View (spheres, rainbow, N blue to C red):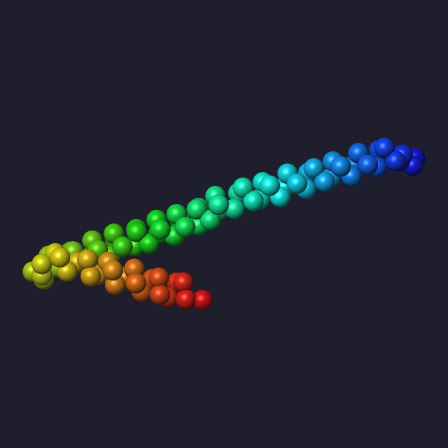
Length: 88
């Protein structure tokens, strides 16, 4: 069965409408995807910082070094992770 002109234009307009909806959905999801990626990386880096600062604090307590220096361990670990992980 051959489609009439009205049926053909109706299918074409429906396709265009779905394409526009798809594009708008993708454009609106772009900031959300960017935020998810940034949030995931920040959470990972902060967990690494907290863990290494805690380990460095334990080492400082064991050796009698002031706890202020435990921050150096956290910053050093985060610096190394960022330098090597993001250097592609």
